[in-house]
Length: 408
Ligand code: MG
Image (cartoon, rainbow, N blue to C red):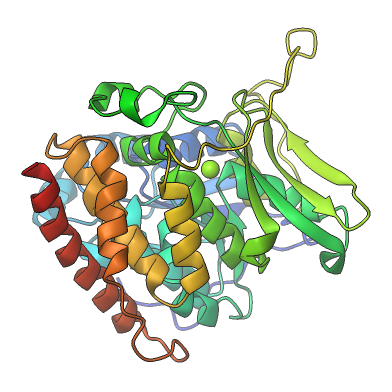
């Protein structure tokens, strides 16, 4: 692929900033949960949205099927060994890119880039989209958490916009539109509590992978579903909220809300709390990030108020779910500590899914790894290599810790 001489023109915008012409969309991580739901949203309004690029790590079959339907100009595959097979099976004239650079390249191809990559691997996509001055619809929270020191430096690129595709942060983004930033007292992130809400540590010693993957309200990929069972997902979201909205950790609270109808809230200094409610469906945050400041008409259903009788709220059980406070600890330490937290957690979750460690050891692996975090020199002027080094170091340590815990 030859790089364009300058960035292609954005879709035209109306006076309120709404894009008026056809909006081009690039979907990275297109075969995952967020990616497939993005294609679903886009398919509802083909006049307005056109998918020009698709990318996935290694799901060739699904990628080919998607490409035959949406006919993008470019398709990228993260695993270069699969590029030949992919090229043979795509319609003639479709450009094929391969490797992490290929995935990052398609992040510069469109008006809106949806980053639905799972885990730390999404960092290069986030950076490429922002550096190219694109709107980034960010479902890959790991990149803004682990890569905070470098993501911050490219967010000011002219044209770059970051819209969170995470239900809580999308909710906060909406709530913040009702007041001045200076008048915000607290962000209140809601958590479903996951499949193990209400259970105590001694009841969770032997829970299996199937139980951890049985989320009560949300349909998501396996990594984030396990993160929900440990409350690490909420911990990561606390850091994500701090990075996205610049609110101090002392002013970000977590409230368990089992119905997953209130997606988060903002409390203002006068005591007013503004909340966003909707059915738990990720197609709303995806559509919001595509259309902001406009809204897409939803074919996905609205709340039936005759059915909805109870909204419950309770404090999180921080003793049974220590990952939440581990995330606060890493967030407050700042700099590269969130990168360590994220790396250790990815290694631990992988080991749990592979049956190598018990569910409670996920938190132990993260805690033991984080204990060895050495802040070293101060964080200003961090580079991508610093973040990659921190990630690799923490992964190596976490793998050692996993071996210790799996031996018990
Ligand atoms: Mg979320």
